[in-house]
Image 1 (spheres, helix red, strand yellow):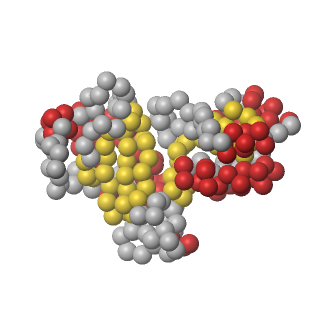
Image 2: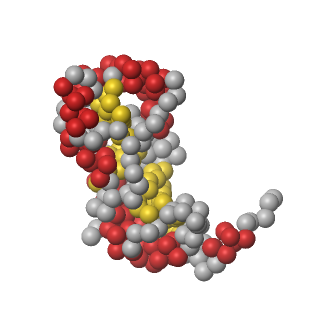
Image 3: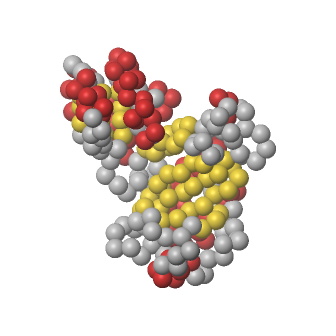
Length: 232
């Protein structure tokens, strides 16, 4: 077994792996250990008490982080005609129809979020195997299949974060940057956690939010008491 890198070993000092910290404590610990030469992303991971193999236990939604994500988001929009012009005016980075679909099929995905007008879904639907695993497939339930392109593009660029439970029952997302102050990170995390709670499926039984952990891109994980991440 390879030895633990000195940097990670040092970062783990002061963290009790068996302890559950409050959200405030966890944010302090994670920020203090985000010492990379770039602005690390602060990431949250939640283990939910659901079995996504059952249709009544899937968890999916979108949350607008009050303090944004701290990263520049490139938005692609599938639209044509007047709606394509509307998307460009609203600030979309890439706009197209069949031509954009061809680029995606070739593996060219120069964007982070994808939005489509309803009439373009027959075209976008063919890209499910490519966009789906990347959590980029437009979906009306999270506001990315819409004719209100101006609002959807603003939300995507302003801090909207989509989430979807994985097969293992885990949800993870970036909730800010290490450069954010503690209050901003805490507010973002609680907003995200509340959104996940609201998305609790009807088929979930027993404890819903079972385990929560916070980390930075290059830092160690810190376990959090689940009850401290929800509410105001």
